[in-house]
Image 1: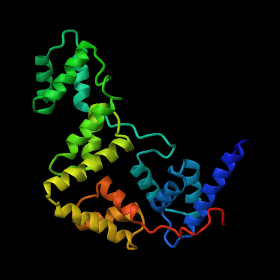
Image 2 (image 1 turned 120 degrees about the vertical axis):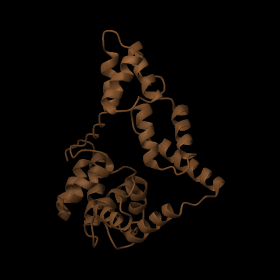
Image 3 (image 1 turned 45 degrees about the vertical axis):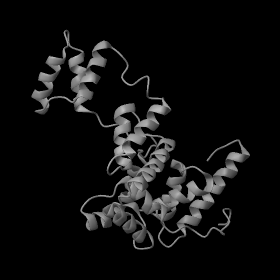
Image 4 (image 1 turned 90 degrees about the horizontal axis):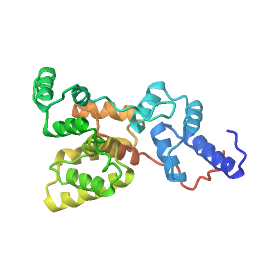
Length: 258
């Protein structure tokens, strides 16, 4: 790592020491290393540090790919491109016709998807016809973002996945950590008010905590164990709980020791 700044160099050396310490653990994994770095320096490991750690440990390519899927990035550091929405693509095409109309859009939609378009999608179509920027006025409105988070949190069985899907659909991006924390706080608040414990959710949480105690040590192993137990892959929220309960290295170990 080239740097003309001594502080940057020292910062890198600390990260390298963390990588070496994590690599000496009985079962080194990218999941544990991710949270070790996050705890110690307040930000996740960069691509150079991940590459260095993988070289030290010889972690399987399959686990590396699973890690990048979990953090939502490609191996070159770019955010994963959003999946295209075929329904919105059809709305865009219909809105670009010479004489667009809701009737024509509905007919094309039924022919394509065998069902009428939702009201929200019709609203999207009309905005495109008028040439108005869709959601441009609310994408950076924290009040609107928090309001959406609270709406999802007040549902019967709210999850972080529901929040992410609804947020991306409305604002065109994933929720920030601030919005996610607000959602989780509201979810706990509404859950206590309803006093309706979700036994299946609690079971999944306990499963994640238990296996993190030493039975498995990687996200990939956890996903396979979870699928075997519940017949489905764990949600990002449950996966976060698993990673948070992985054993940490000895806090008395000095970062600079080799």
